Image (cartoon, rainbow, N blue to C red):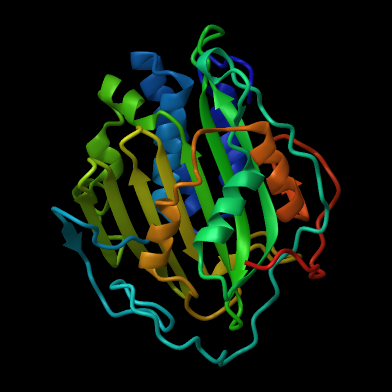
Length: 338
């Protein structure tokens, strides 16, 4: 992931491996997105970062949910709220499970996540680590919930050897409000805004507009807006059978995109596909929005910040695509409390 990858083949393959199994319809969507990204690269010689944008945008779009922001809002497909939280952000009491659910797979290994050193103007700093991103996420979400099952990785996406690289950080954890765990994910794409302005595809409208993303009406709720500082905010909610997904995507003024999503489906031992592990969701769109707008998610951090996260976010699994490590276990193991 850290080596130059001019045609994007390695990165496309890595994303296909990473996103495999995240949802009943996500695999084909990501595969199609990867093929589209490769076609675009052949025609326009887009950078690897552009390929990441195309694949990740569609992948996130399949499992996200967002809410109206401050300023010019376009909302479509608003429907009834879920049992635990509504699109308007109003909390309702946590549900009493009406049936038994399988336990999500718990990560028991505690692996090392090597920091990626910066260069040029970022000399002396390191790329935002998966652990540090999760530390910020835990801090931003309601403290009553318990968090566990930490995993993630970071990479530098480079167009060529001279490119200092843009940070891509992806991480996930389980968040439990007492009524069962939800799978919560965060992704930080440094410099995304600059890249989509330079290239005609994908462009800002492709990534941050409900009129494009929800053209087929697959989301029961979608809202896009421009905030006072110029940031673009996208809020979406999707229901597929018993699976409920919400997500917030924020294209910040510094041109980094922060995506935070939650779903009531997760990996379960002895199952190839994700399974429903609770009723509804413990997090509202407003709460996910607050996490996406956290000030503790810069693209570059100090080595000390990375070290601090090592002590608070554990056990942690470095899930860099292609990395091999200890097997996982379905036996719960206590983690840090959010």
